[in-house]
Image (cartoon, rainbow, N blue to C red; front, side, top):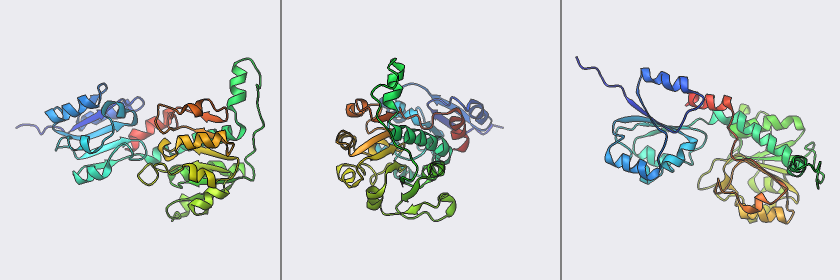
Length: 312
């Protein structure tokens, strides 16, 4: 009697902290993995049938360098056997989920797994930007003690505006509350359940949030509506001396407009973990001492990277 072949699961990229869980899948499926290559090679392999028979693809966030974005071109070349794509991260900006649905491919992601670590990173950037820590931190390492440090600001009593009260936004609000912020937020709609608004933050319109917040922290997904959402017109609406935090997606902010607002003093400081054209960073952000910069490390903790593949 011929044994039924196991389904094939293809891993794109490396899973560094859940190897045990990945290997355990071998009891249920034939495991394959792509560690090297580029988009051209992946497309050619799909077209020539190398990946025929694959039932499920698990892709890490960094695997985009191996395949490029899962756009219409790529999705249309995926094997007809493919039924599932699991994305080990939050958001769908690397995957055309609608095109996948049209092909009968289910797509999942792991937003809850990254809430805590991303919110923690946002708090770090928030406090760092309020105190403009880049100048004294750099001066100290250069043997100049505090250097040309100016005074920063305390968070107490200030209005914190959260753009996007999803999992990360609500986790951020929970962490910001002990600093005695007045917290308000904007979503497409007010959150329906109290558990999604643990600090009882006030719902306001988009423009009201821009005009009345001392600190604005962005926690939105990237899509056609949010791409370029914050530009010159929006910065002009904001309070003088506003602080901007972004741990969501770089393309939500027009970086050229942010640089102008910083140079003009409209924006007091910014804390950024994501960039419009990452890994490229606008030179105006690099040279501005009032910007705290991180290289998209919001989810880069052992605990989160173990949790992501377990949740997907």
